[in-house]
Every structure is written in C-alpha cells, then in structure tokens.
Amino acid sequence: MHELQLLNTRLDVLLKKYALLHSENKKLRITIAEQTKNMATLNVKLSDLEQNMIAVQIGRSVSYDEKQKMRRQLDTVIGEIDKILAKLND
Image (tube, rainbow, N blue to C red; front, side, top):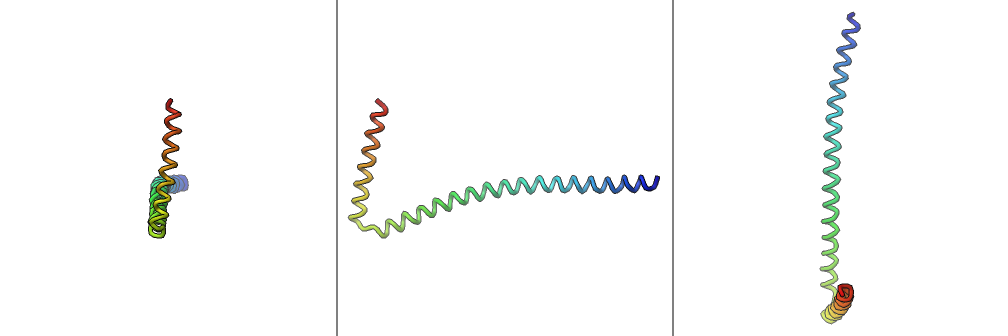
C-alpha cells in the first residue's frame, strides 16, 4: 500500500510539472508570435528608411537639370496613365 501511495505522490508531482511546462510553453509561443510580428513591422520600417535614404542620396547626387528632366518624364508618364484611366472609365 505504501508503494501505491508513493507512486500516486510522484504522479501528482509529474502532473503538476507537466501543467507548469504546458503553461510556460503556451506563454512562450505567444511571445514568439508577438516577436515575429514586431520583427515584421520593424523590417517594413527598415525597408522604408532604406528607400528614403536612397532617395535622399539620389536627390543630392542628381543635378538640377537632371531633376528637371526626370520631372518632365514623370509628368509624361502620369499624363499617359491619366489618359488610360480616362479611357477605362468611358
């Protein structure tokens, strides 16, 4: 009878440890999901900052005449897009 009681006590201890580990595992999985989401957000921000940095570098290295030429090209492309959109709406 004593062995059975000892076995029951050990089983209770193991079940409590299991419940604790299960709870900890669940919390860790939630933490990992949150950290993954935060990393994705930070990666997007980093990408935006890199694009802004490149734009600033290009802006500094491009001469006034080149900027004007690019602006005219963009205006032309935007005008073409507007024409296409107008045709699609008709």
